[in-house]
Length: 95
Image (tube, rainbow, N blue to C red):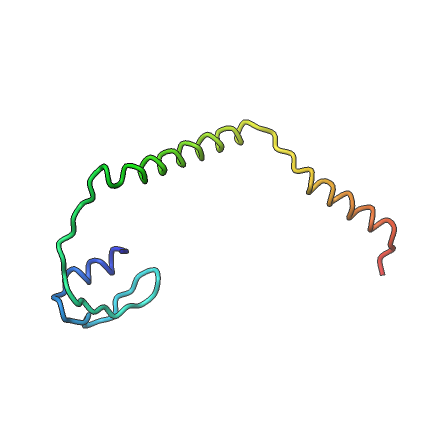
């Protein structure tokens, strides 16, 4: 939850509506709190696979960004499209 929404929602009692609309970057909201429950933290074993995937993805993206920053990248599709457009312009006079 975004901060303004969470602050308003957690300050309310179950079964109540927000007395004023709450503004967030997503718009205006009227909040109704139906019930509150104690949250529980998942164990490391429950989230280990997700954490490994996220760390691996971040490491991969960092490696690719590092390699791209040192590389000279040539987009032959764009070059050939520009050449084809130039040739087409030469063959057909402008109207």
